[in-house]
Amino acid sequence: MSNSTPATIEDVARLAEVSIATVSRAIHTPEKVAKTTRQRVNQAIAITGYTTNAMARSLRMGRSNMILVLAPDIGDPNFSSILVGLENEARAHGYGVLIGHTQNDPERGLEYLKFLSSSQAAGMVLFTGHEPFGHQAMTQRLPPSVAVFEPVFGSTISYVGVDDTAGARKAAEYLLASGHRSIAFVGESKTRLGHVRRRKGYDMALDAARIPPEHRMIIDGEGSIESGRLAVEQLFMRDTLPTAFMCVNDATAVGVMNGLAARGYDLPRDFSVIGFDDVPQATYMNPALTTVRQPRTAIGKQAMALLLETLATPRAEKREILIMPDLIVRGSVMAPGKK
Image 1 (tube, rainbow, N blue to C red):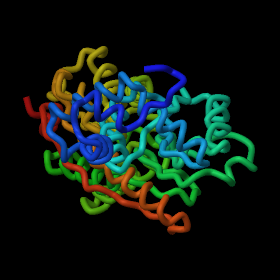
Image 2 (spheres, rainbow, N blue to C red):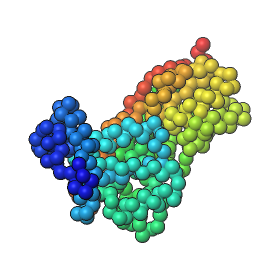
Image 3 (cartoon, rainbow, N blue to C red):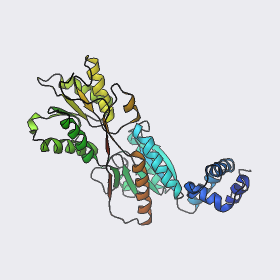
Image 4 (tube, rainbow, N blue to C red):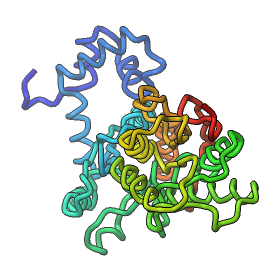
């Protein structure tokens, strides 16, 4: 097909040997179309370039059917599963998804902010935990937005995510039920709201068990593997050690387990470790990591549904949708002193 002639839905239907209505359903409600038919339509779209031309037409009409997903680290194991939920829901309603990878770089954030200010995206999903860096004049004109994975501190942006406080409380209660009374919390942060909420769940469980604040060990951490390893080094400089480590996320738990293994300890006989997120690698660790599972695909689906609802009613008030997580019991926790 000539590049100078925009493809039409009729072109796609002719090539796929289906009706125009079937093409429309395959694009907007793919779950209602048989897999083999959907594959034929997708191949025809790719060959004709229809999707690209449809996007271009929407821009010429002064509106966009694209949603920008702004993420600091697309390598984060949580990102891909949430993205699946986001994209499936967006596609079912005739929207596409663009990924903006900031790599925690303010300059990249500013580039995407300029992209948004030119109305090339109808809405935005934030994984970053903060609004895009940039000029104040731009941030005041942000399109409808929803945050996932990390709530945005001090913002009017709605949020869809796991119930961090309830999940952390489940984790701490499991350690307490296993007999632990000296539990270190690794991942304290005053600037990351998700960390603050998980610390709150830890405190609620220990309060209920009547463990006084002076008997709790709180270690700072930004949620990386290295911060978990450093937490072990800090604790081993103290006179007293915990019997269990409650980590703010699975990456921190990996660092803690690596740090303990490097010192020759046998887990979980010597120390118990529990994480949060249930990243794919958690199953393959040695021992397999007990953790709190984030319902990532459900989070993505609900976040996109909320964003599309906000697009329909732009003046909607800020909302927070929290999904209850599950405790996933594996092999990294046992009673203290048990051999």
